[in-house]
Amino acid sequence: MAAIPWGIAKRTQCVRFISTQFMINRRKFLGSTAGAAGVAMLVETATVALAGADGADAAAAKSPAAREPGVRVGMLTAPFGDKPLVDVLDFAKSAGISCLEAVADPGSKHIDPVNFDAAKAETVKRLLAERQLEISGLSYFGDACAPGAAEKFQEHVRKMVDAAVLLGVPTLCMNAGMPLPNLDRISQIKQVVSKVFTPVVGYAKDKGVKIAIENWFETCLRGIDTFECLMETIKDDNFGLNYDPSHLVHQECNYLLPIRLFGKRIFHTHAKDTLIDAETRARVGIYGPGWWRYVVPGSGSIRWGEYINHLRMQGYKGVLSIEHEDSAVSREKGFILAARHLAQFC
Image (cartoon, rainbow, N blue to C red; front, top):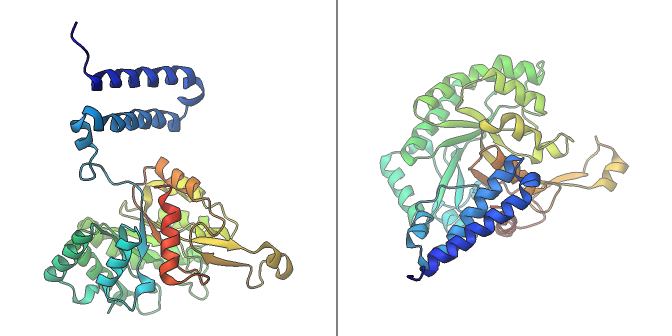
């Protein structure tokens, strides 16, 4: 009888092993969605491991070019606002960061939609390709609800949409506007935010671009109840969240709950942590100063492995965009530490 090729024999052994383990553990494991996904991942891992022996075809199927992008580490470029885009790209590459959330304010050194055209877009795309980087989003955190400024805000957002189309960027990141006097947050969302955003959401939808709102607690988007109001008021499927869990920690809200409630409308995420000083809080009280501050991921209260796993279970395959606001570490070191911490879960 002809000998069985080594690769086929090893595959057979691998499948038998997986089948045996599956039968032993199926009652405990397969009953959950995570269990089913785990079995699929085990099969995939075994196939990739064998590819080096005799499976050039399997290796090709799992090559970076063929593999669909998953959750990956990015960075908000704001702390490098004094540097040209090429310098930020070089830093990101050296720090192991693959995506950039580029500041797109009027006059930005990174992406300025006011003076952007096809030629500039081609230059940016070339710089990205040379470093194997991507832009995950364009960011503009101007006050959407500033009295008398709605038209100016909308005009800039339209220019951002046009720049995003030229660059192939899927998402615009912004906030919902600062609180207005004589209006509670829910009323402001219904009466003001909806009027400001509805026209630009429609414009962006026609161009295939999504708008993601950051839940910065100092804006009119604070507790989870305001998230619900915003999503119910503007129902467009290209309007959602640039979700930042750090803003919920010091409010003592459940930072995992929005993932379950709004998972399909989380288009982008900020990776920032919150450090709680319980001793100071016990002395000054929750209305006192100095008992919490923002830190880089891995230095605060958020359990990033758990957080990212929840995102994955909702189908999220986007970016963890590091927002560096940690006064204890330098600009460069903060991004490097954060990227290193997050990478272990990606």
